[in-house]
Length: 84
Image 1 (cartoon, rainbow, N blue to C red):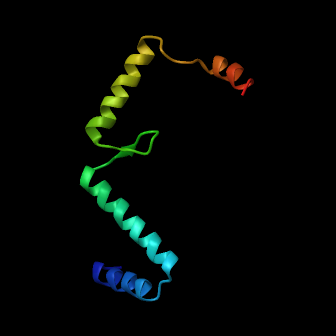
Image 2: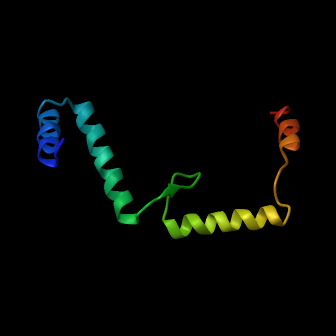
């Protein structure tokens, strides 16, 4: 489907949309615009966008923590989770 056809199809949906669909479309567009503005490639655990540079830095930090022994082994995590 070409861009012109896609736009027409989307406009048809919008013309016939109820309030709930319009709110969903608005939220989707706002999220898209925000991602585009920040060039987000991922999100942190709090839902904040990360740029490629920030994402790569997070990976480097995680690798450094692993090299320094700052991690929880699978067995330890399984034992710990038994008490949750």
